[in-house]
Image (cartoon, rainbow, N blue to C red; front, side, top):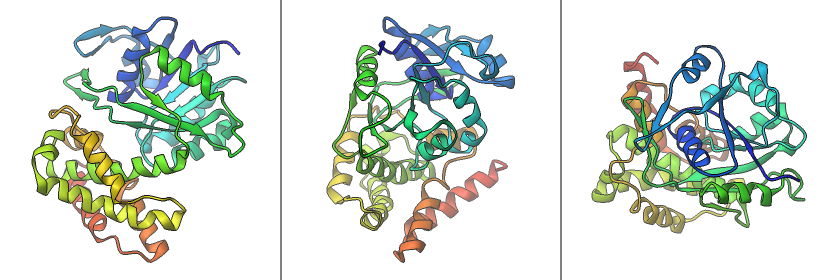
Length: 307
């Protein structure tokens, strides 16, 4: 099979822009965003600045796809996915691989129900600190994409082909022994760091310097750790410690996606995080009071922005 060349990115927010820049800076890739409607017109007629460098990224209308993508990277917010699934399907050909770096535990199944699970790998993005402010995108740390097969028999997209493309783009990556455990680890991180940052209005530097901020973050995460064994996932407090070590390497001015949403008055992904934890807590009869409280706080914050 030929190496990956045509990259389609669904979602032109901070993370999508960062990955578009990384692939554009490398040799041998044709990179495009995917959009329709007013978003298509905006991207078609506007350059973007990533780390003070100007990029002219192409844009594909999903109704006018002439060549299937080799790799589709989905970097949407959860509440935008349902409207975009058919657009993702329009990009897929026989050899297309689809990699979702969306938050939560559900996006692959949602996409796979329309596109076929045989085109997907499970994936998470760890440690990328991309920020979008004043129409400019910045990131200090490219983080790492962790990915693996959706089927036990390793059928589906060629993992080595994806790894070669990420390596060529200079994007750190890893195929772990247990991708589902890695996804739950990232879910734990999001539940703790995204939500604590949103209620505290705190960039990463606050967590690096404040034991109280880290304490709130850890309390949120501990409820995920308590739930994980019920879902057959082995998580422990050592996994929280591992995240704290990574946190100390991130830019002090970097911001979580949920903090960026709160500051911009956008709808957050609280239902994907605290909402999911509370739902699982009811299912397994495990108390989740910290997430229940934070969910209420963030809903109040959203309501003040009109959501």
